[in-house]
Image (cartoon, rainbow, N blue to C red; front, side):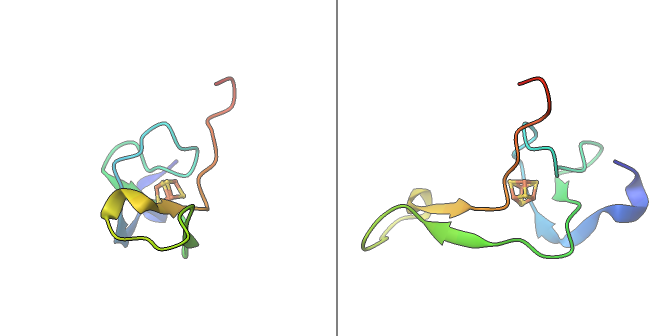
Length: 58
Ligand code: SF4
């Protein structure tokens, strides 16, 4: 990923994601989809980035 595509509106520490900027803790997508795996989410860990993509080879 190159720095020009870093989206500083989307901070992210998930460096194992293919869409992560790597050089800095931001996403490179223009927009991400957020969702939940819980019927009634009550904590931050109930919420997921549904735009996550594994790095190739992982
Ligand atoms: S797609 Fe989601 S998990 Fe992946 S870098 Fe962007 S915000 Fe992080």
